[in-house]
Length: 200
Image (cartoon, rainbow, N blue to C red):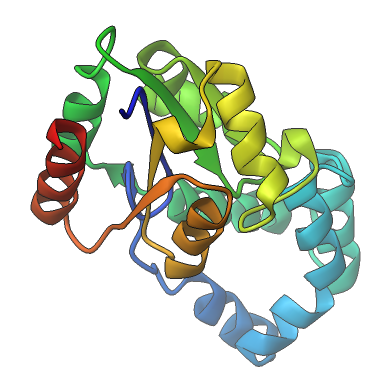
């Protein structure tokens, strides 16, 4: 019997279409979009698992892309605007209403600074029992450890939990530790699939 429901954030609770900000910056800097990703690959990875602080990331961006303070602020604002997206209000409301019948949690491949910004914009911390951010636990999906940490925090066995994500590999990671898994394609499908499992 399922006792816990866990969801991803980006592309699920937050709708995050690409805004084209990297392409715009690449054009302005006379670079290819892949050049920006390449120059920042190590600090971006570090930010996602918490080995790099926000300040260290900003310093690396400024140094490697040659940005002054004002341009750096604009670059980071563009990054967070796409990262945070807009609320998937239907799914957020459905998810919040699961408590107290079910334990609920969020498992997110995140970036340093995400908790504070997502709490300020969406209040996720008030709507769910726990949030497992990759930058806080040092591992990211589909590493088994991140799912097991979520189950530990919710005091459920993996077999008692279901996980929803828009990335198939992340759902497969959850299934590999024994959780039920649903791939998010759209909100109506996701809710219907989860409700079918919860009532099964």
